[in-house]
Amino acid sequence: MNISNKLILWYERNKRELPFRSTKDAYRIWLSEVILQQTRVEQGLPYYYRFLESFPTVKHLAKASETEVLKLWQGLGYYSRGRNLLATAQHITKILHNKFPSNYLELKKLKGVGDYTAAAIASMAFNEPVFTVDGNVTRVLSRLFAEKTTPNSSVGKKVFQQLAENIGNKKFPGLHNQAMMELGALVCTPRNPKCEICPLQSHCLAYQQKQQLNFPVKSKKIKIKERHFCFIILLYRNKFYIRQRNGNDIWKNLYEFPLLETQTKISSASISKFAKNYGVTKYESGRTHIHKLTHQHIHASYIVAHLSKPISPKKFPELKAVDAEDFKNNFPHPRLIEKILSENNYFDLL
Ligand code: SF4
Image 1 (cartoon, rainbow, N blue to C red):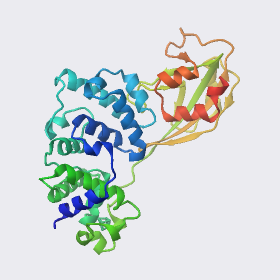
Image 2 (image 1 turned 60 degrees about the horizontal axis):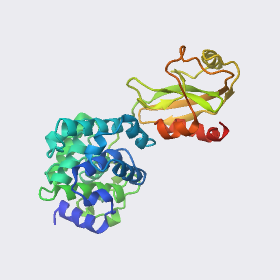
Image 3 (image 1 turned 60 degrees about the vertical axis):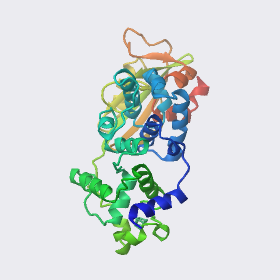
Image 4 (image 1 turned 90 degrees about the horizontal axis):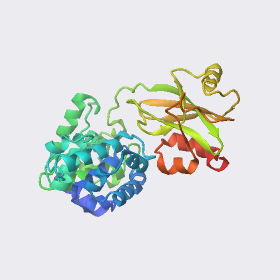
């Protein structure tokens, strides 16, 4: 039996039952693939259900506002995925007359759809023989073939794509792709591969060489950018002030408190100056959170000030006063803001 047949047989017996595995609907597969990028299945599943409930078809999604989509996406991170979902749904309804692209090359033209997602949809929904390479698949392939190329380099991407195609199943590409990913998620795991129950053990070079944990070969450490944030929570009566983020930065179009950002640790003198800008001289300081993203670490502190009069909308037109309930329900915001609000029970204190 070849690699793919063994893999599919194992998959049929051991796979987790997931709602998007039993469908050929490209919309549902696309939704699940975008949600599950960089996200664990347990974390992503409730989002998948909520999206499907709110937007059962691509047409429903296309009619949503960006705020609605970001609100549903809240807490999942990498918010550009949510914005791209909406842009793509609108493109499909308006330009493609509701017809979901049905092959790899056409799928790749969609915003936010790269090699991996296009291959996943094309193979699972349309049975096109194209093969997915994600983190799980890369790990399995690197170990199977003891492949020393670093997967993240441009050469590496080609090498791993070729390996995936070499063992891919042209008759059942969708099943094969899902089986590879499932093997990586359940058996060929990063730190403790369960080689004793692996269906591909007899083919695996890393196993034969007892080198499983040395694959995939790690790329040089990515440089992490350190950012220092200080938010100011301006409270007036039962409301606080927020603003919408813009520019091409993290959390684009989400809402947060007014912010001071620097590249080095923020001094107390800078914080006083920042507060003074809003007419604040007395404030309390909150604790610092370290929010880790793939390429950046955010050291986020905050101060809280009770105002005796409202903020002048003329001076600060970007600021909006909201109460806790309104903010919670209508303004998508990063998880960090949620944490800051809830750790001191600000919703209750207001
Ligand atoms: Fe991964 Fe072990 Fe299977 Fe090789 S034998 S593919 S290292 S689980």
